[in-house]
Amino acid sequence: MNEQRIGIIDIGSNSIRLVVYEQTAAGAHRVIDGSKRPARLSQKITADNRIDEETVRELAETLGHFRLLCAHHRTNTIRAVATAAVRNAVNGAEVLQALGAETGLEIELLPGEEEAGFGFLGMVNTMEVRDGFLIDIGGGSTEISLFKERTLVQSVSFPFGCVSLARKFAEQGALDEVGLLALEEMVLEAAERENWLGWSPGLPLIGVGGTIRSLAKIHQAVRKYPFPQTHNYAIPTQDADRLFETLIRMPLDKRRKFPGLSKDRVDLIVPGLAVLRLFQRLTGATEYRVCAAGLRDGLFFSVQWPERPRLDNVLDYSVRNTCALYPEAPLPHLNQVNRLSLQLLEQLKPAVQNGVLADFGVRAATLLDAASMLYRIGASIEYAAYPKHTFYLLANCSLNGMSHRENVLTAAIAAFRSRNRCKAQLEPFEALLQPGDIEAAAMLGSLLLLAVSLDRSETQSISRLETEISAEARILKLTAVHPADSLALEMQEVEEAGKEFQKLWGLLPELVVR
Image 1: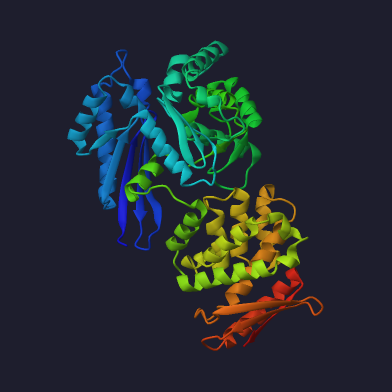
Image 2: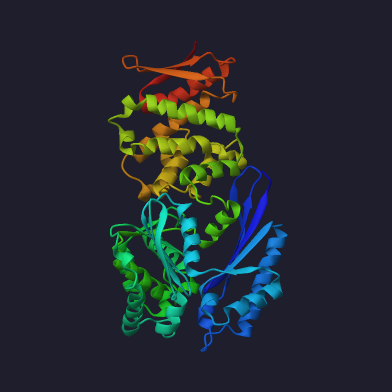
């Protein structure tokens, strides 16, 4: 596969954003650059609903800057889109024509339903959720969708967003009781035509965009949340209500100092939350979930895989993408370790039926599956201390399809060397963990360490492994059948790894050859 770079430009109502994606020769993708410029286009629309020449010049300057960044990164493709502010302006077509002539970019004007579709694609490819509502509160529009079995069922785009609502109802950025009632009345009047919003109570309301991300950052700051990601973060509805009541009563000068709230959201957060809460009540959603991916990610997937942009397995893709970004270990070795570790876990099930691993259920295999493919990515920083670096990398990224708790536990399993070190690594994340998590992570980590030792020569010499548990002697007998090469190195490594395994499992591994 050849290396490719794709630039995605999103001309939104609140900000103009560029994201540059790289598709590596190994088949992985990542973001290598990004830029954001404030726009507030919805506030700059004139009284006769036009975008004036000065604003067009400012847009052209920003787009020219973004095009230079794309040229610097030697992008193969640039896809530029405009959304609600341009869509709602009476001279939107002329604006896009002028911007195209000035910058040389071909800019698409996305219809509201198409914008919702790309946002859904960005979400469904990065979160393991089957049913729910998806809401994107932009600057000049709000898109909400219902999906079932990871398939879009209904969607609608409303011509209002946090910037246009702040301009209309929040005088000098402050939304009083009269303004709030007027805002809610307008939103309810628009929403009452969409009967399907009340069809499926009890589902999560998943949010993309600045409003929900700001809410998550505030909520995490108040909680002193230890995991440095907002993606897949859950917020109870009652917590959001309390934060809204606090913020709406707070003068703007004090709001600027509120923990977790960025300065460019000070006047927009309250109107945005007002809309978010209203749709939560209309849909009967049980909680808010944050999706850090959205329109731009959906556009990337549609450019990269136009025939089949939706992923079948979010977590598997995320793990293999991360593995391909850090190809420090040979893939045949990783596949061998993966196969052996999952086999060992399956055959050790009788030993864990009543232990801490039993509470993990099938997710124990899910976490071990991911950790076994990623255990050596830290070698991309330094081989000598790769377990430490592996933990850092995995604890500071999102494994899509996992909760934050599972993400951190996977990092600990992949980086395992001893129970004490595992405990020390997980202690800063105590607020995420449940009783027994540290012990379970240590058990799975020691099992992974044993699987690694069974292919220490990285030659995949063990074509078949038979296991036998001697309950009386407390021995785990590992019989390698018809090895292609000598297993002297593996025998030494199993003996060493067996010391920690025995402490946690109460079984001493012994490798024999037949």
